[in-house]
Image (cartoon, rainbow, N blue to C red; front, side, top):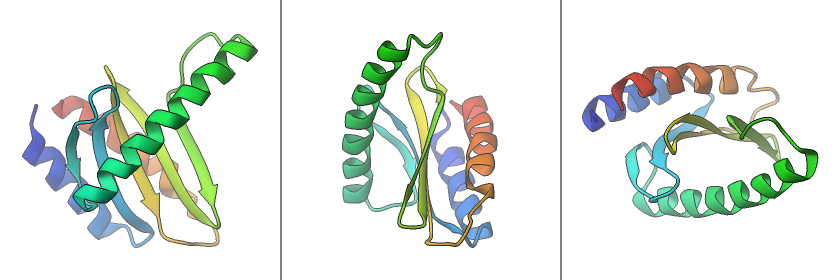
Length: 121
């Protein structure tokens, strides 16, 4: 795993996207932060929230008899978008946008970053 390269990739993406507050790559099962542009405390709290959400999402998938698991989740909170994209084997990328009228590229960029990070894991 190339943690420093992943961290550089995240930092560069945040620096170049005026709509992003930050990005984080983490392992949902273990709670390990691989790389993050957020503070350590914020990163840990975000993983806790993601674990809770994924638990409720699994219940919802069971109810509707989905053919597969969740690959990405996007939530809007008062015009701020947060998203999680599954990379592989329990690894996810989390992104948070600034409050905006329409940060439409947020999920697209997250999907692209997930592919790039997947190659480095």
